[in-house]
Length: 401
Image (cartoon, rainbow, N blue to C red; front, side, top):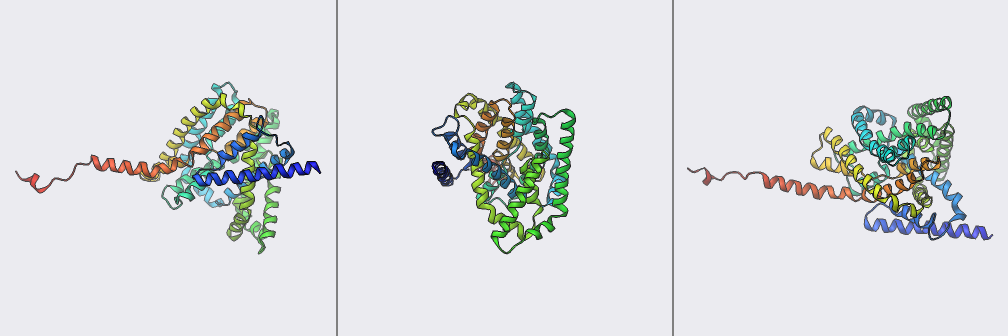
């Protein structure tokens, strides 16, 4: 009985604390992610109070959170849109990968973490936060802008790269022998291909199976399918999150909209738990030694991500303001960066990797929602300077000789 009291008290206080932090973030117009991470840091290893009674629940809840996050991102796309996007944005995707994975790889090698950690940390710096970016575009009313499809196409490309990257990294981190690793990678890639084929060919059948006039029944069906597919994906060394992503892609029509609506509260709850749990597993005392390096890396990758967005928007004909918005939108890192770092930490790589990733994500998750708000003021000043530099037209009097 005493244990149950402790569980309820700790869990209730954590959820209440998340609500307060979310409200504070909304009041100041920033993302709640850095506040959730800070909350976890405050009560985690070396924090003000041990939350040992709910550790197991938070671990499971964190996994469910990332699965639901990726499922809802998958709902935004169809297989045809994914294929079409890759045909038109593959150059931007390559530029994005080269410019933004390289700083993480180089940083890990310079810090002496080894080549395996370099592969993992390259993924941390490469992937932007789809969740933060989507929220920023919605809040600022930019969904109908000319540069928005360019930004979304880069995010889709990053998600597809992750669908290949995560199974490869998971297999390598498992420390399998060469033959086992080759078989595992082949199986993972086959599973990704099969998932895409099922999503593109069997999506309508799945949507009909899940359809229900009752929100309760639909929620139970969809959540059940998501968790089953996530479990099967993990079984073949594909990330559970990637499996959930393809379930989201497969759904279409009214079922897709209904599923997004009814699962939104669950997604928000468990996503918040996911970020808190990562903070709980990070010792606050481990952050100060890596804070300077994380800040330097953040400065570098702000430049590379901005250059990526600017270049991609320019390729599609966006004007100065559109290029500026695209570059600033891509800055935040969040859910995927934490997932990738978590894989490395769980595999026993250099313990500084988790601390560095936490500090890095904290910086860019806080900066990401604020930076795009500077685009319009900067653009206005730029246009004023251009007008000031233009010579004024000559008057009639000036033409009189």
